[in-house]
Length: 316
Picture 1 (spheres, rainbow, N blue to C red):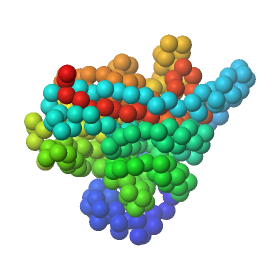
Picture 2: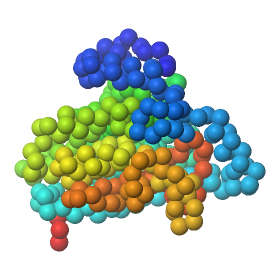
Picture 3: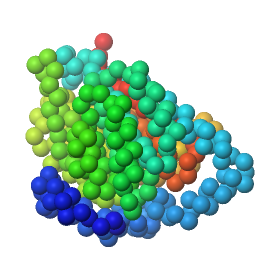
Picture 4: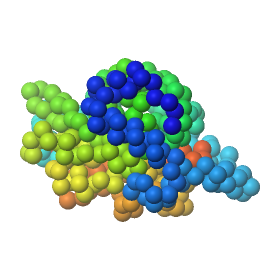
């Protein structure tokens, strides 16, 4: 683990409380590069660096690498309609820009494409659902700088959560650039005299620092609420906590898929139907972003990268 700057530690303890800050940092120190065990999965491919070279080599030998690399830069702007009778009338038409899994250091061409798409996009708030860094451990200054460049193209309020690739040491820098990080917390968003609630949890996949109860405790059970989580694996808990919407990423939609978009792996413990795009569980609407960037290998097949505009509406 990269040595922790004393000023960052003091800032994190003031921001999150001593317990959360030191627990997260302690788990990072003990487990951030662990391949087996820890988290919801037993095997963590993202930490097995030798396998990354092997996959890249196979793609090179088969002649597919350069096609996959080209595919990874072709980020699409997708639209998703979310209809809910609980949504206040004044929020009808409210639009959320959703960006996930940017992995900025190894997704430079994709980030340039994202910047192009954002110039013509119209939205009310932005949400970033984690995995800003390419690696899961080591230096993070380049990731912070890359997010800073992306932030220049974002307008309006910006909210974010951390993913399994992210160190909590990034939080002070992100918040200095105007990104409100939600770490088992919630914010009220007001419009036309009405309120909706936006909550976010710390990484639930690897570090297991999510606390939905803490994030939701001040949200009235009959209020419209959205939960940001890096991974959709907590869909059951989110639905039972009365969230109306769950916005996630993590899976990359499979990143390298068979024809028809069938993922080889989602690196995620959940039904495959929830691994990419919209889904529903009980009364909760979910959306799993395929992500804007890449990890492990800079290639995509049958799974275009995306940023998404979620349009909130009352049922017509």
